[in-house]
Length: 314
Image (cartoon, rainbow, N blue to C red; front, top):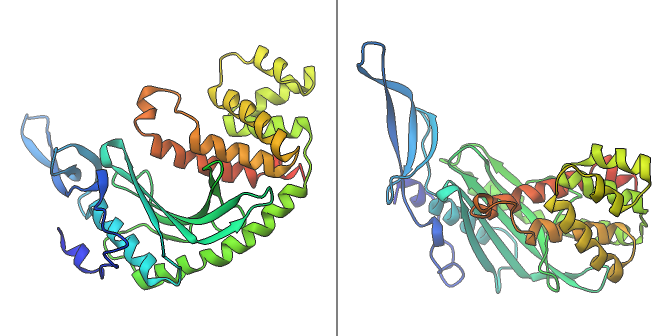
């Protein structure tokens, strides 16, 4: 264990005593070398970050880069939460990795902070910690919610995408991060008001189509089809040049949510979060990195739901 971990005061063992899952490994930096024109070895200005258990390369960085093992950052996240004002009774921690351990996603569910959603379900506050060793993600901690009935991971729309963000993880400011995380309670309260407004806001068939098409990456094409044929899903699927698995999943889920919740923004939002949480990846390769896929989908949901396409429904 490096000296970084010693910087953080360990949280209550009874809360976080389950180890580090697939993130339980150390890392090291190895200088990279290259052949010059004369066939001689020379040091480059880059280093490779590797797992010390498998020697798998996780990322390439400048020679000043100081990698921090994912398990040390998980420990830091635990300390941040324990130093915040959040109620941690019954807290649940889930650790996922992607890209052979180069990216780590840790979700904390806090059942002490639970509220009723507009459709009568319950949702509890969640925190997500993300970090990577391949420059895919900065170290961030963000707030969201977990719905009890559908197990959807809800993306907060009303505030900043991240409560706390740090580019360099070698010297995290734990106190500052804890203060930022405490703000998640206020963010959660504001989000409930937004959810209620979304539940009251009706949508048209065309607005639903454009919203899902934007999430699925085919908005321009769907706009063209709707302009020619009207808001018809059958026309859209008949004229798409190739199958879009995301759009297919969204339409199927929408039929279920709209039947249960009505033709409103809340049903659209729940359809999107169902897709970002539960939809399988398009290929076997991306399925192996499903934690990263789901995180990127959640960013898509946030962007779509705060875009003009979604707001038109209001």
